Image (cartoon, rainbow, N blue to C red; front, side, top):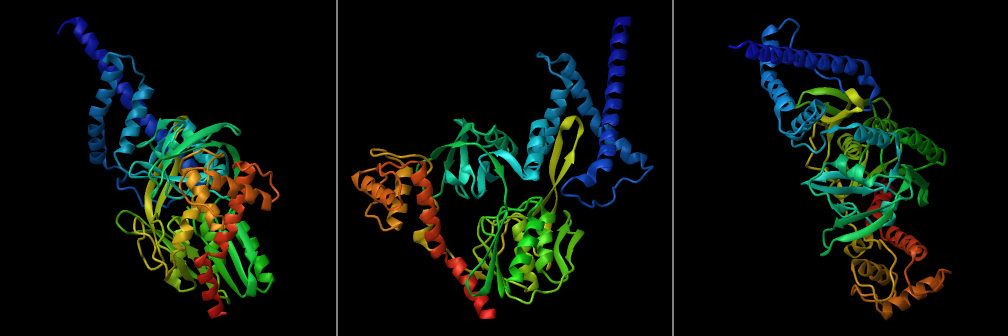
Length: 489
């Protein structure tokens, strides 16, 4: 071997040892960071003891051998690849590839911008369009539009599959990448294209981003002394807000309670547990189990059974923490679950802060009901199944933009369906014809609006309010809940 060759080999060996030492330091640093900060995050998990005991040199040597090829490839690519590439880029790509190999849409590596977005979501306020999304079969799917947000006003619905954002095809991207595209400064526009079951053509809407604040608890007293509390999601304030709302209703001599979890996509488990503890008797609320079905933690209630009957309303957009609460009521027999089968998401995600303002969101366990039922990817069957009337389901399609005579698309058909339901003489042809113009002008006259015959934002808002009233009057699920309560009061 020549002196030049020996020198080159020696330099490569030194670099390899340096990379190994660097990797060890990074691992140790992250372990120290994890132990120092793990209790600060929203989903703490009591993990089982590590499989490797101190002093197990054989296992350590095996791990070192498994990493050898990775470190060699890292060094070769950094030094000899045709195009210059940084070690940071290679390591990030390696981490992303490792996470993506798990084939779990709930597990993702979060770069600094995505990590910041996740923290914003948890804190309950952000600037965007206001929809809860998930990845289903490579499609970014809306679990639920958030109440009183641009997304809801634009007519986006649970189950819509978002296929484009600002003209960019997003099929196959991660949930966090989709969030990043749809979030943005308040007052800026974003164009969303969705596919919807039962609608032949994609629907495209332009939405103006707003600062989204997330009120999540909506209480009121119904007739006959029945209390009603709708919970739309679980954020940092939901548990305390619910407790205050429940206390206020109870001081008004409430004789029964309807807890409405329809279209509730979930959120922070701890906040859901707070609600369950207000209503459930002493005993388990949910079990957190690992990959082997072993219980890692059980969340308990310490209260007493309420003296009044309770009904829980659910539907196909009730997911995650809302399913956990409904399942606990069902297993303990302390409430009647009414509605339709739930979404079927009952996995536990943990957030881990990493170096360089990055993070990891990963699935660590599943939730089970108090009786040990696994409802993930299965859903929860209600005690009393009640569908909404078929003729009312079309009314969940909302008009997403202004319209004028001569327009022809699915939005016009949605408008015509809404007008027909309010007893205006139109046919749902999808063409903004003279009959549609007359009906819009009549609607505007009857509600004190400028009678132009064109559909503007003011008219759309009033029309949505009228449809909401109609849906409430014909809400068969709600009517059944009241009936069940009255039978038990």
